[in-house]
Length: 179
Picture 1 (spheres, rainbow, N blue to C red):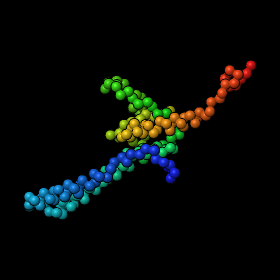
Picture 2 (cartoon, one colour):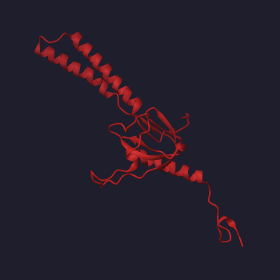
Picture 3 (tube, rainbow, N blue to C red):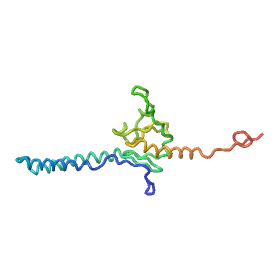
Picture 4 (tube, helix red, strand yellow):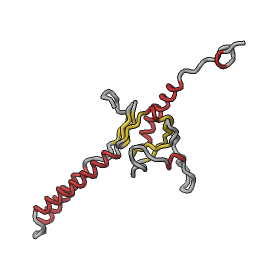
């Protein structure tokens, strides 16, 4: 991505606020112990807050790295994978929302996901895309409709640009042939 590319869609993957839950719970535990009396030493509560906070911070960091989404006019980044939009040739239609549990799924719904992951991450919804190679893949986001709304016009415009301008018929025959 270049510095001049405007971000059209972004999802962070996770927020940092859960990291603050560990010190918060430790503070509640410390206050409860002080009110009841004869509880665990303050040092134990501090160590628990630091250790649990560090583990949660590691989980949040991994989630932000592997499940974040960013779309610009030239690139789609899903997790750690950047896909040039020229590699995507078609965005598949959304599946029928009225289909039953046992109705057949769309072929793209079982395709491998983009983003360096083999499946769509939990809590995200897939968007079927056809790659230049012909392979079906899944882009994904929590706000899949928001990503789709930004991605479809970009891919359609690129597809029209690749086809080039249409030749006008001259003399009623294709290709401008005249009799």
